Amino acid sequence: MTLAFDPIDLSGTRLSNRIAMAPMTRSRAFGPGLSPTDSTVEYYAQRASAGLIITEGIQPSVVGQGYPDTPGLHSEEQTAAWRRVTDAVHARGGRIFAQLMHAGRIGHPSLLPGELAPVGASAVAADGQLFTHEGPKDFVTPRELTSDEVRATIDDFAAAARNAVEAGFDGVELHGANGYLIHQFLAPNTNLRSDEWGGSGEARIRFAVEVTKAVVAAIGAERTAIRISPTNGYNDIAEPLDDAERVYPALVRELDALGLAYLHILEGGPGVRELTLALRKEYAGTVVLNAATDGPTGHGELALIEDGVADLVSYGALFLANPDLPARLKTGGPYNAPDMSTFFGGDDKGYIDYPALTD
Image (cartoon, rainbow, N blue to C red; front, side):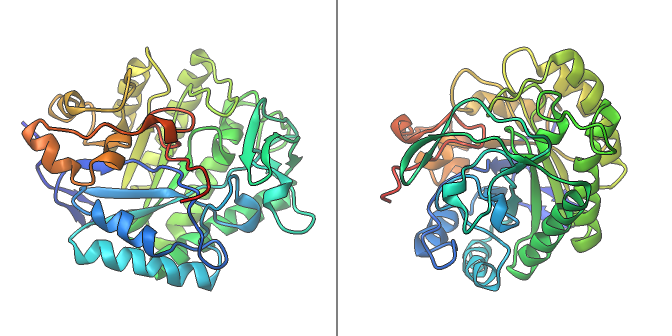
């Protein structure tokens, strides 16, 4: 029987255990040009006992920024700053993937320089508000990307992936979940296009597939992964289960053929385990699971590895309060309780560690 503390090989990257640190937006890129600082180095190095660290969302381009003070990987300055983070993690025996996240319509012009504004699969505004340095602001209607701009955005992902390797990351995870740009192309309420990038379910998966292929071509399949969250309604996504049951198996079959490092599935809520199991059957490679839970993922979710539902389980909230989480999981605790007052939007589904912009 496979256990959570058994090592695993990710296409050549050996992990010491099967406990992953989930990606969590932090809004702490206070260095020059939205680059990580000394506190970022310390934060990730403290958690190097995870089998795999997946970083906070990192924008692959200027226009990809969706929140205040989030880091990028599109400049030499940012790339050099991330090298300090990866060196620190590796020095402690850890492995770390950079999550590349283009926020798409989730953002605001006040966060972007000049005349730039958020872009999306279609000109459909998200319902709700975004916290900015100027206070909460309504989401704006994004500008629909032209077909040429879609291609340019794919190139941005590939360029950022190359920068990630230059910065010393073991690989990259594409953020195709939580209502950000890749998810916006997948979902029927945010992709109203009638060209090759939208319409049918087959066309809606094309952007996700083409981004993944471009990154594979840039840095290799063994360094490429993707995160998806079927039916997850975060950021005003409406993805009915019957639609997801058609779209996501088709997507996963395309991804499976690429031989990626792993597929990361975020369960959008109760009742989605059947879809997770169906996708697991479609995917022959390594599966990381961020399980649907009533609260922060805990010790009980380790059984998902023993039962073969997942190869790794990702933890968020508990990793914030317990940097040595794998050791605590091995002994069944004790656990420090996460400070839920700092969380924005959920528990450990990848979008929680949102500060008051004073840290």
